[in-house]
Length: 64
Picture 1 (cartoon, helix red, strand yellow):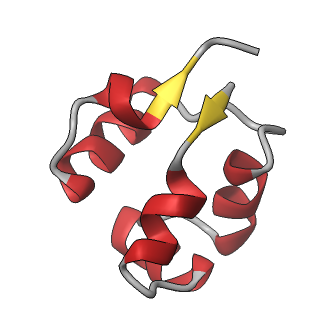
Picture 2: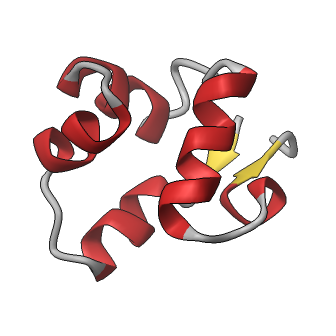
Picture 3: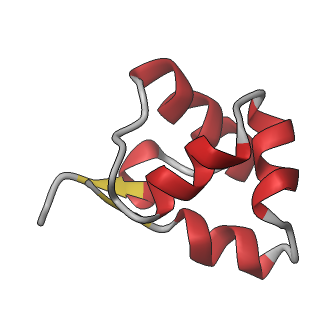
């Protein structure tokens, strides 16, 4: 699953640990999502959308 997490995080000068803390997940989870090795659960995707104040579709894409 493609995503814009790394870009959105960088725009805010957040580390992976900062984002992980905000989303209540591990830094390793953020790393795996950013690299496309792990697809977030729907609740986690909604949490990301709320945090970045964007629709889920603007953060995550199922296009390979």
